[in-house]
Image (cartoon, rainbow, N blue to C red; front, side):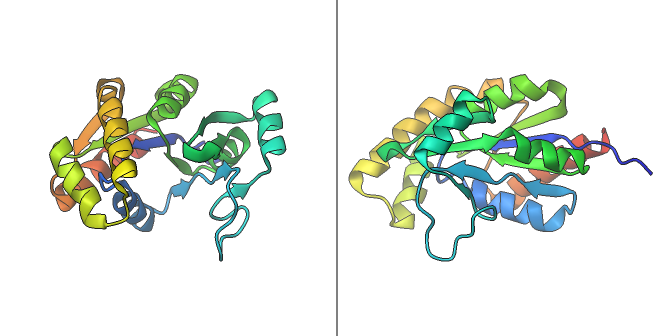
Length: 192
């Protein structure tokens, strides 16, 4: 029996909007999903395994892959660390019939959507307001005043792109947001 090729699921949210929690639960409940493992130039943290949490690449290797067009998208973050989505990693999952979940930034997401068109669904998860986002980030206690300001400015920029996404889900109440995202995904998966 030939299986259907999978499709791409793009989930984007400003930092602190609750994306990680939602994605983890979706992965637990929908067995057809596979998480796209990103490549990065940052050093592995203790316990992280190459190919599981990330593909750890040297800057030279990363740049070579950029030149060879191996990335669907890539981005450079604070401190010069680079992260990218390897086309081969995603294609591999799709060929096996899995739906590949990409947890990426706004610009990368729009790029991937352009590549896969109707074979991708893009979901933007947004906080109820920037004020609530600020509170959530402050409550995490992991932000310095500088990084808090940086994240909020970035969130403001990201929110300007929400209309470019197929769906926008407000994470005011986690249960409600989860139900909405799961419904969008089930519809997309079943329409395949």
